[in-house]
Image (cartoon, rainbow, N blue to C red; front, side, top):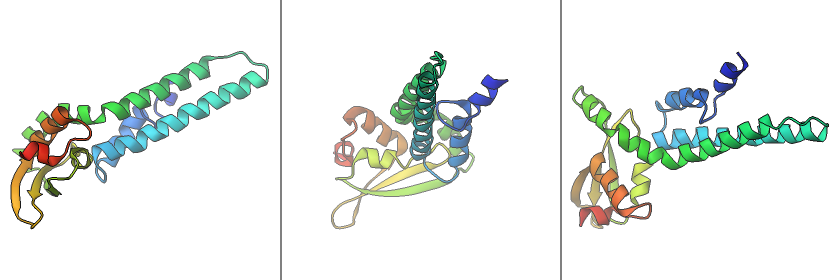
Length: 166
């Protein structure tokens, strides 16, 4: 029973963190919601480790809290790192939802916009189209999420929209 309750704590990578992240998706992007919950996971892990240190200073020799805190911290780091890739894997599910009139959000960008700043605004519950404008405010191209994610994978974290538009 204790393990069940512990797993429901609202901090990623625990199940409670996944539940709260899904609730946050109604207001925030997938990446931002994940960022909020991984921070709570890291804070929880630090508190657990500090609690274990306190126990050790009081003469108890249990290291289980230390290990739990360490693994929660590592799990939170991995969730944070893989957030964009998880979104990419969920992209096909969104294409199916689009057929059923899912809300489309328009994002505006210039050629100098970093791809990562566009990806940060993606969320599994919405479909985004990206309108790329030049310096004069004229539309150059319309990109879909697949174009952006392909560019993100190809050009990396510091890639710019101009790399995709070429």
